Length: 261
Length: 321
Ligand SMILES: Cc1cc2nc3c(=O)[nH]c(=O)nc-3n(C[C@H](O)[C@H](O)[C@H](O)COP(=O)(O)OP(=O)(O)OC[C@H]3O[C@@H](n4cnc5c(N)ncnc54)[C@H](O)[C@@H]3O)c2cc1C
Ligand SMILES: Nc1ncnc2c1ncn2[C@@H]1O[C@H](COP(=O)(O)O)[C@@H](O)[C@H]1O
Image (cartoon, rainbow over all chains, first blue to last red; front, side, top):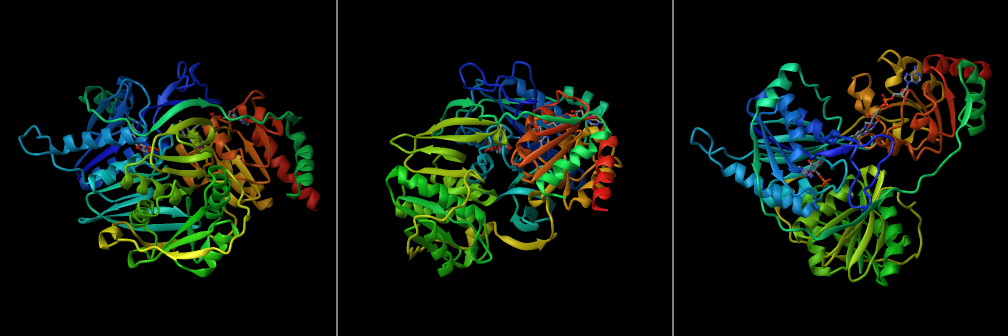
């Protein structure tokens, strides 16, 4: 089975997020980069399905050239191919992101393989439920709709059958089950699985895979950023109750006061 | 007109629907427009009346075979068709899993922008809004250029409050639906746990990498049980396989809101903090006085959690006698 995973490169901030002077971006000068945990689970899920059913996993990202790092990471844990849709580094709005991904998918699905056969369509396309930074909750749905394929969001369990895909999503105190015809699209959440760490061998192999670069023309969507800013912080004076186990009495005084004893 | 999409479950409006109506009431007043609602998959009088208590004047009800249970395709298609035939200026849902999913489905069909998880909305010729990024660690001011403003308000951005009571009229909406819309529909439901869950626990005893091992959590379990609470954890802990993901607090885990969160061995990264910040009180236990969790807490103990937590447990037992 052929599986495509869409991941987005985002900065990995620590205790707080700083914004650039013009307010248009996260100040990532001293930060590492990563993808959303949801998307990491998507990649792991795809690799597990490949291990169980055979096939191949392609990972796609739209972003600056540096986003190759996220594709190579995915390759180091078992993805077979990487595709990078280059942007000029500015933030695309959700409609534009989706339009670009749709174009890329159509091109990938109609491309001829090295053996002269058509590569054919992806049986399953995986998105994160939401991107870590923008959190638009929509790119996957827009792509699925444009491709005319079913999608369900919030997925924490996937089983693949010959004709259909069964997907589970959490609800209050339980879960719902959906059955989608193939080919299908899913928006997955962290908790789907526990992503593996790359092995040394995987890391070496990932350096050698070829990253396919694509350029696509996608129209701007209808949403535009004005500025980013931090929410107001409630600053509290921390009362230090002690520096060792003898603070236990003071802690229990607090619990008593709060009425949770 | 502002159209609010109502989420309902087992014959009742869910909390998120009441939040959307409360948020929508203020927005409709700013717009100088009527507040109306969309009730998909039901035409229950009790639900219509409940929407009226939150200020909806008219409730557009839509029932059909393919709407007998929840399905994102069918629900999104109905919202898109309502936009086309009722011509609202704006459509609002609550940014719950379903709310955001339905709105994105409708937006994809209409080819319009959709702005998820707004905190504040300014209507006008050009609409602008402040929305949540990074799960709440950052805000984005954004603007849209569209014929209809498709929005969701962040979950728990406002507290649900009845107001502007109306004797809401029910109006049947005839949607063009067929079997193709049933492509994604809930096929089965599994109920798992009852009792105290992480999102509703009055006390959460959280553990991070500082707990040191899977076994180290036994001390946290003992204290949580004694206090009628639950154990939570950081992502470092789930990644190490010490606890299941269902215990994870944060941006990609659970949002908690206990009376008190006892956060031990957790540094307080922003992605953890956004899941913990709705706690009414925070008590941090950490060896590092400068840890973000300590700085942001109401109280802190600067010490090894493995010494402090058993001592707290003993003290609680002693006082209870
Ligand atoms: C997009 C994204 C989403 C994320 N989502 C989440 C999320 O949902 N939830 C989440 O938690 N994280 C999330 N993270 C990860 C987050 O950035 C941090 O890596 C993580 O929260 C760190 O966990 P920690 O505090 O347990 O570990 P550390 O940061 O390693 O902190 C350990 C702490 O334990 C203290 N300590 C050590 N030993 C002891 C001892 N004996 N007694 C007392 N204290 C001790 C140390 O002083 C330190 O403060 C996300 C990251 C990204 C990029
Ligand atoms: N720039 C991007 N490149 C690749 N995938 C993306 C990009 N932006 C969003 N996605 C995918 O779409 C999902 C939803 O994104 P969003 O609508 O921004 O919340 C993410 O979890 C990713 O899987």
